[in-house]
Length: 376
Image (cartoon, rainbow, N blue to C red; front, top):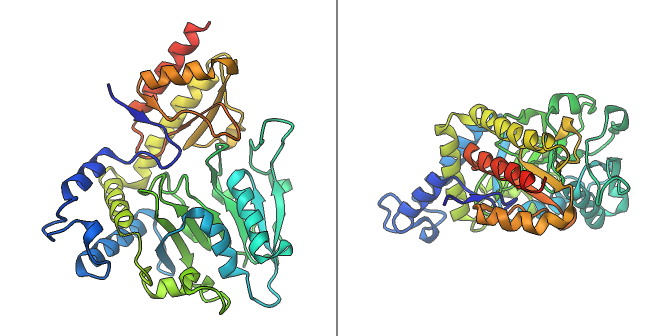
């Protein structure tokens, strides 16, 4: 029986990438050792890191005036590292603006206030509605709700909320009102590389690797050069973007194995046709799953505004929550794994990242249909 992993992260990796990792585990291309055993400053690993960056730049169309950093600490560390680099210690620096559309952007906002002071960050829009749904985030702010301050040090947003399944799908329209000179900082952890994104619209992009990039332990930061060198002298050097950029992400030992696997994922994306082809496949997967939910006559329900439903993370509930345990047990028997929703919202969640094939979504939709009919 084929198993399909719908985990929100760490998530499934492409099978052919894992097979290549297996083949090269003991001896990477005649080096006499595996990547986990080689020096991060040797020519072998240097070539791996350089190709990974070059392939990522090609895939995403990253402009030359942006640095690509391979860091550690996860996106959660970036909740603090961003303001520590762009806000802390700078005299007369204006506060940063935050848009809160789910758990992760809410945590980023609170962490900025914690490390830089409560006045360092202002929430300019929140879509939380606890009366509507538990821990309720089901939409993006409307344009009338979104007033970015012209004096903001930066604007922070999470472009795909993994837990709540809310995604910014039209970045051009959403960011059109951002005043000139206000850098946009985006947490793209759970949908980076899923479709084309205009990097030039952002001052800084960060993403934990464990969704669409590679194994956990690696964090990607793409930062415009003019935002470097703003950190206070008291900031530990390992947290300073400028220092890490100067040292090609190798001030200390980087997560070498995770970078290697990420590089293989980038190569896999190029082989299947790049991000445009990946976007086409992802759109079809999402269409199939949302159609199954919406066409179930209320047996399944997704609470998110259709205009901002995530193509990566699809939360849904059953009409009768008493059936949840039975649904999950049957799904596991059918080879459909990790469908339980986040503890803060309950229900189910199917994460259909790049590595999830169309056949996996078809299998899930078939099971959902059969389960609903058996309870009719």
